[in-house]
Image (cartoon, rainbow, N blue to C red; front, side, top):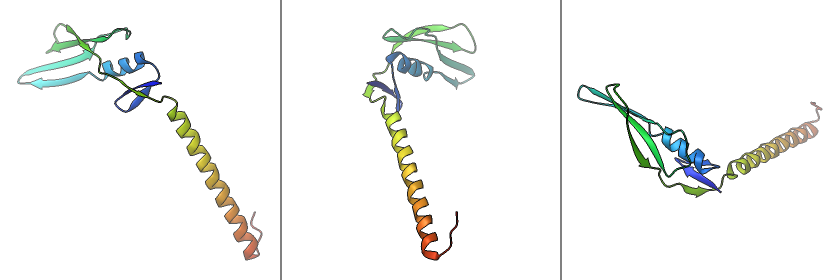
Length: 112
């Protein structure tokens, strides 16, 4: 079982939390001030992340925010999907090769 965050399935909840925290970074302006928000958490085994907000590049004001809820997902589905596409490509290659050989047989030429 995996943990879904922004349509990406992570194998561990810590990886999903790290992605959520790093995705919380932002820069915006209001009037003549510039605000930045960035992740200040170094461990992702708690239930809330620590964010740092700066105004005009000043001191860091930290505050805690709960992580979003992560929906369950099938982490192995990506591997299965890749293998399925590989088999589909192989089957297409075999069909095209067989069609080329049949055309060569019926046209009387022996293109190899």
